[in-house]
Length: 186
Image (tube, rainbow, N blue to C red; front, side):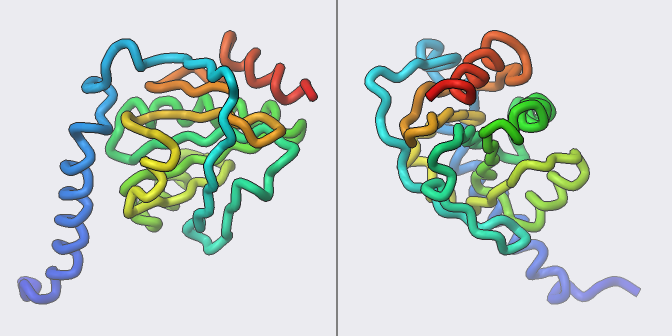
């Protein structure tokens, strides 16, 4: 027996909303549309203070950037619909596994994605670092994110040391060496 259309409405509305969010973000968040001069590794000098970041994971745990002072924090802005974002996740996991107990925290901010989808993605990919849904894309302006993926590396003093716009091999030199130097440094 067919399902009445009224039974499908919440599912369709949610899917339609996700699609509209993705389309609305596309002109500014698709890596291919970013100017070539802005892609890649960007050292920041002087190092600006990292903006506030307060997000709740799908399991209800609240993550506050100020609570990780004294540790290096990698904040990766990504989305499930972004292929390069998904492809760099295993490298971030390997970096997290290598330095997580030495003073590194890795957080993945899922821009425009529903908490349930983010939790399912993290589980199927075996990711053990926090994935923080930002379904309303509230963090983009504060963190100056114009393309996905964008990753900010925050030093132990709460300042952004460098950013990478676009996907990257986080578990290989030179990026792994840059992160190691921040973790081992003052």
